[in-house]
Length: 122
Image (cartoon, rainbow, N blue to C red):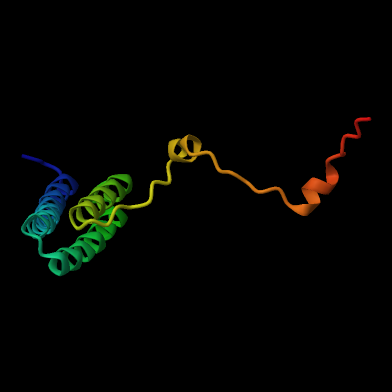
């Protein structure tokens, strides 16, 4: 047990913060379960609605450092992918590998063809 007045106050503050953080983390887990439940059962509108609520709560948790902001972003991304894949809405692949693997064909314009010297063979 703490002897100093400041130490006793620190213990009170820690207990109070711990109780609040525990509630908020439990709320995050509950919202995630809700989204997964709706996607597994095929309830599209409910899944999208609960996903929006989950995103909002994750943003707040990241801002308040309840969880790391990067972790909040990762959870949002993965849950969105789960919902999109379940309901057939494949996201566009924007990775560098996709851009490299599919070469883009360009048409030559009139300006480009005019710049190339014509070969005169006689």
